[in-house]
Length: 412
Image (cartoon, rainbow, N blue to C red; front, side, top):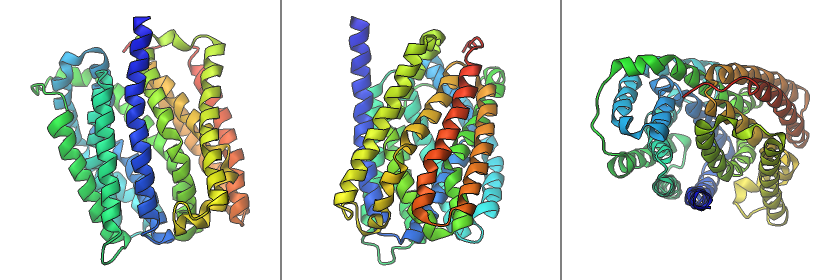
C-alpha cells in the first residue's frame, strides 16, 4: 500500500511538470505561430525538428548510460557526467558534419544556413543538456525538481516568444537569436540549481564498457526522431514553406497531446528497468495501449471541437489550419503508441533491436508519406490520409516490438 501511494505521489509530481509544460508550450506556440508568417513558421518548425534529431548525436548516446546510472547506481553520477562531457566534445565534429549534410539534403533551397545553424546550435548544445538535467533528476526519483525545471525552461521559451512579438523585425532570422537566448538561460538554471552536486571523475574503462550500447542508443534516437519528424522534412522539401507551415501547426497541436503520455512512459520505463517482465500479460499490454490511444484521441477531439466553433482561438495564423485539425483525429494516438513502444525496448536493454526497428519504421514512413505528398494534391485529403499512414506505422511497430519482447531482456 505504501509503495502504491509512493508511486501515485511520484506520478502526480511528474505530471505537474507535464501540465506546466503543456500550458507554457501552448503559450509559446500561440505567440510564435502568430508572429512569424506561416511560411517562416514552417521553416523554423522543420529546422527545429531536424535539430532535435541531430541533438541525439551529442555524446554518442552516452546520455542513456547516465540515465541508467541515475536510476540504479546514483553514486556514480559524477563519474558518468564526466564521461558525458568528454564524449560530448568528441562527438562535435560528427554533429557538425551530419548537420551540414541534413541542411544540403532538405533545407538548402528554403532556409538560410545561418538560421539553420542557429536553431541546431540551440537544440543540440543548449536544450539537449537541459534534457540531461531533467533525465538525471527523473532517474533519481526527484520528480518534483524535474517538474519545476521543466516548467521554468518551457516558461523561458514562452517568454522569449512573447518578447519576440514586439521585435522591430519579426523574421525567422531574428527569432533564432531569441531562441538561443531562451535556451541558454534554461541551461544556466538547469546546471546552476538543479543538477546533482558530485565530483567529476574520469574512468575510461567504465565508458568503454558502455560505449557500444550508447552508440546503439544514439543511432536509435536519431532514427526515432527521423521516423517521428521525417514528415516535416518531406513536406518542406516537396510542398514548400507555406504547406510546411500549415502542416507544422497541425503536428504541433498533435505534439501537445503527447506531453502527459511521455510522463507515463518515463515512469513505466523506470519500473521495467527494475522488473523487465512487467508487461508479460496481454491484458496489461492491451490495457495500457488502449489508454494511451484513448487519452490522445480525446485530447485532439476536444481541441478540434474548440477550433471548429472558435477558429481564431489560437490566433489568426492558426485559424488557417483550424478546419484541418479534426481530420487528423487518429494521428496523436497512433503516433504516441509508436513512441511508447520504442521506449519499451529501451527499458529492456534491447538497444540494437530498437535501432533496427526504428530504421525500418523510418524507411516505411518515408515511402508512405512520399506517396501521399506526390499523389494527393488538396490539403484536407492529405491530412486525412495521415490517419492511414500512422495506422500502418503503428501496425508495423507493434509487430516488430512485441516480436522482440519475446526474447529475454538484457541486464542493465
